[in-house]
Image (cartoon, rainbow, N blue to C red):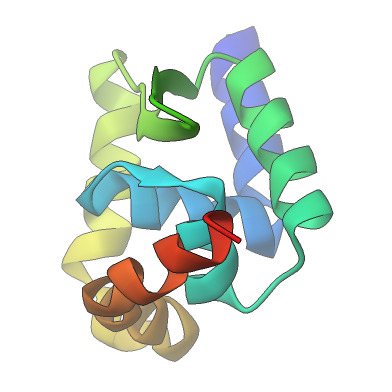
Amino acid sequence: MDKLINFFKILSDETRLRIMILLYHQELCVCEICGILELSQPKVSKHLAKLRDMGFVRDDRQEQFIFYHLNLKDPVLKDIVQKIVDNIENYPVIQRDVKRIAQKEKFLQLCKR
């Protein structure tokens, strides 16, 4: 029961919800998420740390980058995220975020500076 309550607490924050939907679609590094969401690196990193600490995302180091992946093992939690994605047309901000994934390479360059 605690996992479900914590999941809804996580989803109650717009930034964390947007990050989870992005990671549902594919793994991304912090700079890519920052660029897609148009948010600062400290803000995104804070939210990613909370998601990781709660076990909803995992991270993997690849060279100088840390990539984040959605880590939902509970089928109920996966289904909730899937329902949001299936109805993305009802959420214009999330829909725009997902479209911006195609520009992720441009944002990856920000990390190389």
